[in-house]
Image 1: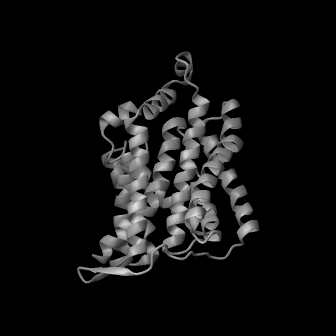
Image 2: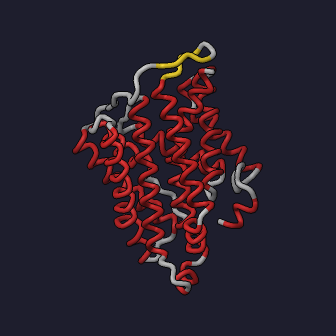
Image 3: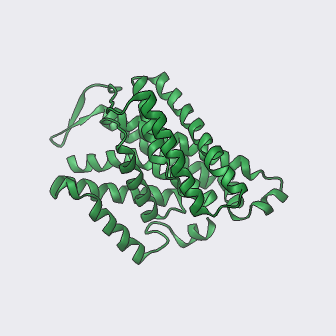
Length: 284
């Protein structure tokens, strides 16, 4: 039961981040290498507000703003200059370095944590389940499901897919692709904020954590199928399972190795992603 709780906790924290990465990739075919740094920066923001309800709301709004700024400063100029997606991805890395420097200037480099929203725990099957952890799991899964529904089951998502398929054709039908790029990056920034808020409420946040969050989110998204939001979140669940089992029963110092092996095997079996159906791949 303890292992299951750890798996759900890690998946709940990482799933919004992975879905944000997949959302940006779906529209622009660009990997946002700033996602981990954005989560840490916004986690520091949440910690500075002690993760209070008003502070959480402000942090989510800041997440949208950071995502939009990231797009306007690192992606939009490169798109105008017809830079290929690989070059644009490296531009997001430059934004990550700038954001990391700003975070160190504002918050310092020490680890930060916040008080739990709800103290106490409930006992189930001989295991103490902290209310804070259960709430974090529910929020992480709930936000992920909400984003998947909005962008996979509504006209917003279908219009975004039309922009991703052919922006020039979409413009002929009166669609403004630039607005959907801003929407995608704003929502992705809010997803990064959710990951930062949950992380700082469950454990702590620090600068070096950004690379770990980024690695796990991207590996999970690629493993599941980065072209699909639901597939990416399921990939994160698989990564969280392997991580928790290794930490619990093997050696916590070698967690990344079995995850990369899982990624390699998954890509060999299903290059489009182990949880992404052919229908989804064709649509996106």
